[in-house]
Every structure is written in C-alpha cells, then in structure tokens.
Amino acid sequence: MKEKTEAKIQQEIFYWFNNEYCLKFHNPRFCIFSVPNDSSSKEETMRKKATGLLSGVSDLIVLFPNRAIFCEVKTPTGTQSETQKD
Image (cartoon, rainbow, N blue to C red; front, side, top):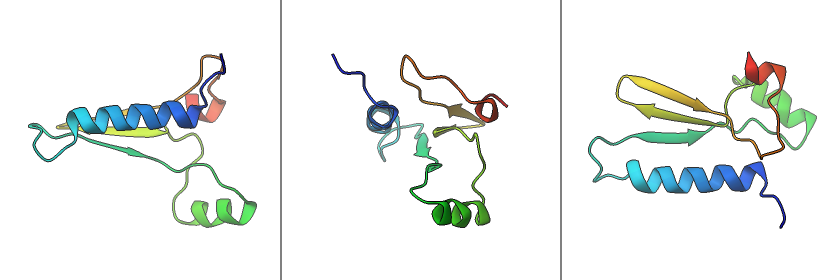
C-alpha cells in the first residue's frame, strides 16, 4: 500500500477538525488554519520571507479559547528538521 503524503494527511486533519469544531453552529467554535511554508521557486520563497515566512513554523495552527496548538504533520517515516524542533 502506498504511503500517504504529508499534504494528504494534513488535508484529512484539516477537513475533519474543521467539520467537527469550526463551523458556525459549534459552541465553542475553534479555528484551524495552515501555514503555507513551501514554495515552488526561490523568488516565491524570497517574497514570502519578506512578508513574514519563518522556517520551521508548524503546518497547522489550532486556536482554542485561551490557547493555541501548533501541529507539524509527518508521514510515519518523516522526521522533523532542526528548525521545526526549535
């Protein structure tokens, strides 16, 4: 069986959490969003860095009342980089 990509795992997490906890009728209503920290070119990376891109930032951020959770998505064989650990 083919291993899921990190993007597919992240998509599944987002859809599930959003539908379970982030819709208008949920009380309390939470918020989940992604941080687009990948780029297709050096120029795109430079533009993103100029507007606040930070290496190692988590893939997903979940906001609850009075707290936040930062989620790094990995496949079973994936490992965190040193900037992600930091």
